[in-house]
Image (cartoon, rainbow, N blue to C red; front, side, top):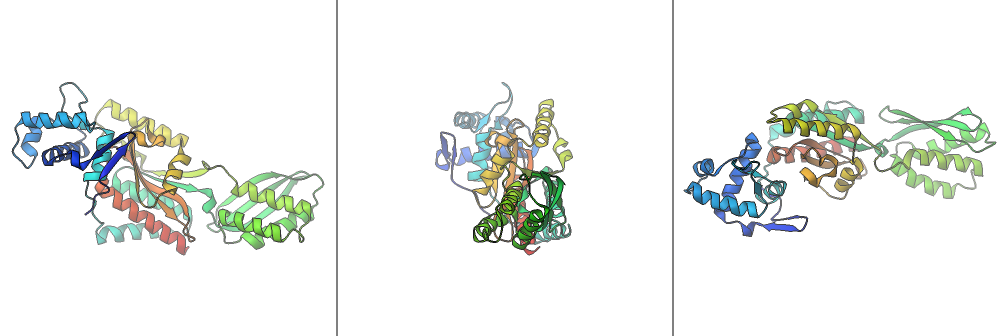
Length: 362
């Protein structure tokens, strides 16, 4: 069992475990546990009954006031009990929560179900996101860069004197087409030569790998290709590997899980906003970029994550890698802030590792 960290900086605020004595920690832990289990606030009278120490409701209230001043809990209504704030949830996850390892049976179940998805990358990722959705009772999500496709074949087909169709066939069977503008007076032989040159250098590579290799090959092969053919090769390469960072594919499974156990109309409104955010792909590049710069599982709670800030959701995601070890996407779950973090974090971590291993061996 392990906790994540000891000090929790949020903006200009940093809270240390040293600021909380044993009573404060236990009362705060019970408030969070109750919220994660039921979604309901808890009051001082109930807390005095369930904490493993003898304290009067008045003493519990005094501790709750201290926790509220630290910004860890709040009262949703004047006469209600207390709920954890986003800062409080972050503090709990990073400093107090104990994360266990997956059981052998959980590992075998995850590995078996993901491996049974088939040979295509899309099937693998779709199955993995569906698996996490079911295990977490949330929405499973995969963000993948198009550059993780491994190229099997590329071809130029002239459509008009100054336009051609560029056809890319990936090793997993996916086919994508783009229209390319041609230089004036380009002979058909140049398209054939460009096709042959590209296929000789990019077969079996990802687009990112191909881009780096082709730039070197173009420098070395300038004497072999005339200037018009060089332009076609460069344009064909740019049309596939030079896209924007937000040019990602989003796979979401298990939307319906987000409708389970709604407590109030405001919960339904948050879920509706989350659906809208998922559909519009808002901020995907930001989310992926933040995970690409870190190893292991990342946890975004509420407004910490621009992608799902309006819906007040939590995101638990981890990067997965291709055969070269480069990060090519992220996988995880999205759900309400009262996710079962201790259970889901190791699941996401292990699933990302299984996806990486299968991609590396494919």
